[in-house]
Length: 364
Ligand code: FE2
Image (tube, rainbow, N blue to C red; front, side):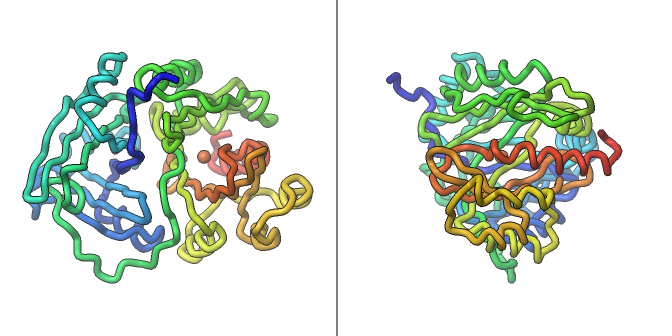
């Protein structure tokens, strides 16, 4: 087997460009149970932007807003609404990662840059991904501060209880019809990923809409990127709806692992997170389809949690409604018991539910 030319330590952080970073940070604290870690803004000497770093388990989110109208962040938000701008991956050697990516055809947006403060040095470099989304390679082995140079630690004052979200499982991108293959090959060529699975519109279709999906994963299997493109359907697919409202390709959902999905979903429901409702009929033959699991089927039904099984085990999953006004970004909560899949057995039931929501928005 050839050696992994792009060894990734794992997810470093996800940066969202948002209209009001202060309020987003509050939302992710009080609702999702993220803990405030560090911030950057006027009081730390940042004249053009404010950023809040929030963490839970191994998940690190950064919410960033512009402080001025004529600013790339402000334009991004005006065009796309709130969304994921940057997917940061941790590497041992940023210089090597960027050199490999560039030599394999990546578009470099920021060459390797070293930032330093009293806590050490962070090296990072940025390459272009789909739409305006970017990948950032972060080397933090020589850094011991809260997040990065420029950020001041936040004293947490009575943060809400965590909800059990433990790690990023996968991040899904939506691209235009005809682009999925390009990005799948890009992940192979530039990032050294391999293709895990491929779903065609035969697997993922309902009466009205269809999509195709390819799942890419890195050498260690820690980092996974499904890529969706719409397929021709009788009506507008959920992917088309996303592309329309995000004004282009971008991150559709971020899936986060939990060790106890019932506890996590119960906590999120108590804090008024709305999840996609699957039809009650979904649960009628579920036990026959999936077989014995550790969880109680009645509780899964009460909470609206989906179950899927493959030859390696089973998984439990649930999807939130979009978390901003535009029908764009949402989250998935997932608990894996051996299964490495993405819940393909649930796609049909889910799409019926998604289309009902689309119809309510007048987009079907
Ligand atoms: Fe997913």
